Length: 632
Image 1 (cartoon, helix red, strand yellow):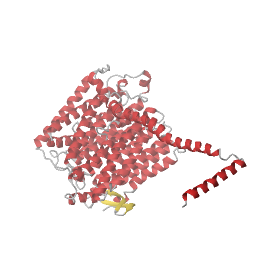
Image 2: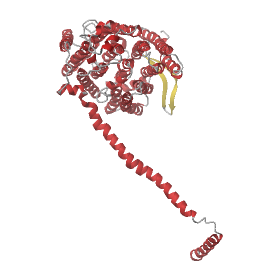
Image 3: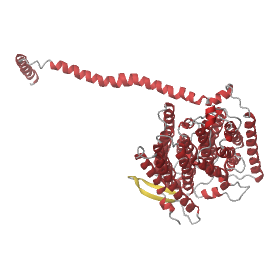
Image 4: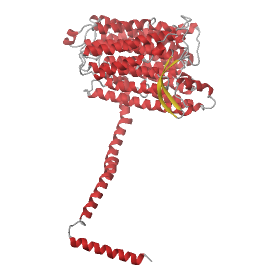
């Protein structure tokens, strides 16, 4: 066995060192140097992750390997070590995080070059990758939770990076607060595991799940699974905690690509896939996961149809794709969900970085109504963006086809009604992505003459990552070929020691071909519809349902009315009565009483000797009187 798994601590250590160097010296360090340090740190992590991946893949690997770093918490019977777990699932996520992360760092060196806070930006980016690596490497729920909170903090810092803009800081606060709601669920779930099983270690907990099944009631499994799912809902932007993610587009575009495509939002899927043994014992909660995922996929897809901000369309498509991943988890297809996480990381990072290239060329403009015809001037961006659109739409031969098709096949075997709704969401995906593509790259230019004059292809530091991601978006799906094409599904075989599907379904080859045919046909149909509708775009004001979709079903307004305003009203009420009149009144009242008493007592200290003698005589008379009547 190779020794890469013993070097696993270096994987998060390099980004941490990069963060410390850039973070401490950001005011004095040259911008280019900051970008190089940040990128090299991630590249070194990627190299070790690659070694770990191949070591885990080798037949001689006896996993999982637990790498103990130090004792973290030790109190009575409670023992929680700070240790990392190296197995197929963590190795795959390491590769996705560091690989896509490195490409985004390289892209950022050019995209952020004119920003005065560039070095600080790279410090935040490195800290984010460090936190995400902690999350997927932790050998127990507590280390996972530390990483979980770390990515929440970094998303706040990166979304509100341009903090002088009030809207951006509000978006950052919204992301932070909504994530805290989910995190509370995760925390309660962790405490329930600790209380019921006396451990937070994955190996001990999953080992006890089977042996202790009779001793712990099934309702306990359901409660733990539900609490962990609430945590996943916040981080992975599912109903009802999804509204933070579209607003998170306020941050720089590479941040959107890193946080909201490849890594942070997939943390919830990672946690549920990692806890597959628990969810398989809580089928009721698994069903809830599937329904919430399906509802999210459809809701977000309907909203994306009528958005005009290039990044908002991609943001809602992310929410929709995460819904697909939860749908896969809900029907017990854990490996399929992880497969879609991987392919989605490729094509969504590609689409976000492509949109960044467009915004860069347009001088900061994000409204697709003011674009058009960009393909003539930005050939590489156009071709790579088209590949991303084909992949996310599930066109045969591209990565998204294999993972999305596998999800839909599992859903069909589980429940045909859910399958029909899933196909509906997939249809909308193809439509809104190609609406975005045609409005941006084809037709004639609709912006200002000044913008048209400045249109140009992005520099190579931005186009090379696009090309690499385009290649991955094309070939990335071939590791998970369906049964009808190949007996050997490489990704399922690789993950099998750690993650296995619950309630395995096998479809007849004819059925599987038919399902592929249906999903391809509807995708092609929707691409043609998008093309015909946007050849001569009409940007008249929306009415009826279209206006509702443009305003995102008014969910933000509903939350504002139901949660934000009542909370503000209650806060004002408590401020006025409980705080000012109650607490302040008591504190000030005590002060006034002491002062009033002091003023009265001061009159006794008049300085006149005669008055003092009089008081003394009166005291003696009182003492005599008391002793005469009292003491018998």
